Image 1 (cartoon, rainbow, N blue to C red):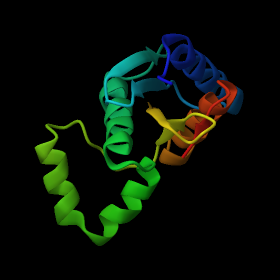
Image 2: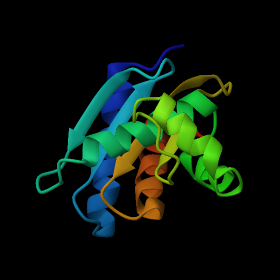
Image 3: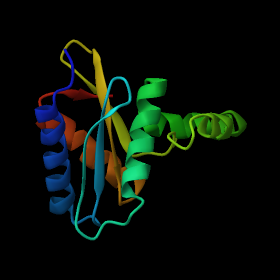
Length: 140
């Protein structure tokens, strides 16, 4: 199974609805496929220009390392030099900060990742999880 455009758009729609429900600042949400390619992106009115780059980099790192960006942030604390070098090697497409989760199917197969930017890392993560769940998929 591969991540479809319809699923990616559903993830974004639900994530932004959750953000609005929670009263968060304007968000940007990026959905990437399992190869790290952009599947869909949306930015709410009033979101800053950095939303795309940050949301994509969180999701890209999650896919590349096979864990949530929260886990990457925790790992970076213990090995900061490696993560700085990894970010440089990835030409700025890697950001180990909370706010992205993996997207998996019912069998646990990796389909992609979704990252958000606009709130705190916790807020970004909450809306990503809500989006994935609303699309009938699981997050990790």
